[in-house]
Amino acid sequence: MTATQTANPPRDARSDAEPVSILEPIAYKLPVTGIVLVVLELLMGLASHGDTSFQLSTKNDFLDLPVITLGARLVIVVMALAAAALTVYMWLRAIRRAKLGTWVGLALGATFIIAFLTWAGAGRSTVIPVVTILSSTLALSVPLVFGGLAGVVGERSGTINIAIEGQLLGGAFLGAVVASIARTPWAGLIAAPFAGILVALLLALFGLKYRVNQIVVGVVLNVFVSGLTSFLFSTVLTDNPAGLNTSTRLPTVPIPVLSQIPVIGPVLFRQTILVYLMYAAVAVLSFMLFHSRWGLRMRACGEHPRAADTVGINVMRTRVRNLMLGGALAGLGGAFFTIGSGLAFTKDMSAGNGYIALAAMILGAWNPVGTLYAALLFGFATSVGQTLSVIGSPIPANIILMIPYIVTVLAVAGFVGRVRAPAAEGVPYP
Image 1 (tube, rainbow, N blue to C red):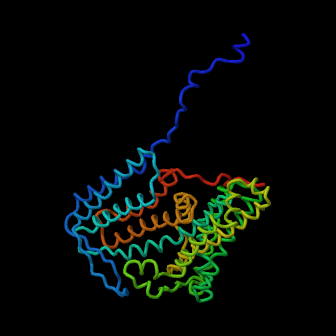
Image 2: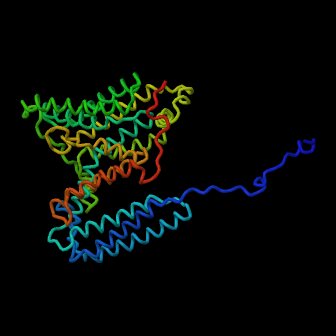
Image 3: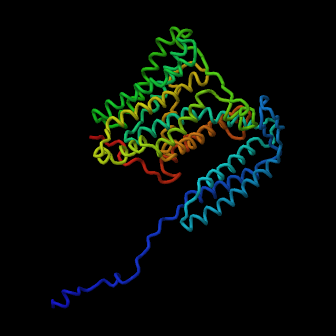
């Protein structure tokens, strides 16, 4: 090899070519979902006959809105056309590889919901109680929101909290017992968070200090709380139900003037203190998580604990404190099942809501506001199923009640979009 050849080595022909741009894959999920929903809405329109009546106000509203009766087929076809327009827009954005706004998915879902309710009430003498459905949606979302927020706080700091189910159940149990002993639901409201904190401390002890697999510890704690509360219910509470397990309910606290606004008032401003605490928890955590030193330190512990440690952040203390905060939130959500609903405690009354809350957290991308939206989706599906089982519907109510769990599976499987968990979640440190 000559000196010239050494100084000027042969170059690959491809090196002179222009750099190849790597395009992101086209996101087909939402556009394909739009096509499916358009087809379903058209089928519902063809199968609908007669009119559907909607009730938009209650007797306590200062403006009494009349019952609205609309032609079912016309309403459903209009919704199908709107869904088709949104689907075309989603396809155009997908081909251009442009991001879709959140409003697109919400609008598409709204068209299907309106079409479905119209189809369910078509040709029937019953009225679709819109306010009742929406109020029930918000109420049923309370334990899911609090449980999801507990997961957000824990996992953002690096700890996997599978024990939300046990924290909800513990909060429901302790809230009912303390409220029964004190003869006031307010005492139960104060006591419920402490049950969640106790479960969180057990998770911190085994999962953080002794480094047991956090998922395994969470599942074990759920089984432990379920067995313990069932045992106490069968022995202690059953022997003295009048003194330890009475039905007490938090009073409804209407907001003056706002609670009388049609539709919005009864849904948002005629609720118990638990719902208002939920509003505050979502708002405060949304701000603190992304706009405060506390939130920055928490996210640093969940993303890169070693880097957080080098700047003086006590990772272990941060994770334990956030677990306790999450446990308090989940315990507060568990109070909904007893003092929030006016029911006595029964075995396993959380009924898997802790796992649904975890799915809401994932669907909400570990964000408090996103978790709220996902929880409202699950609550709405349950509310519609309960309402249609009362007024009658063309399909069995049990199938409607399956919707939250179907959405859960799709969310966990990643159908709703690609989300990334905190990088160091479940990783012990130091």
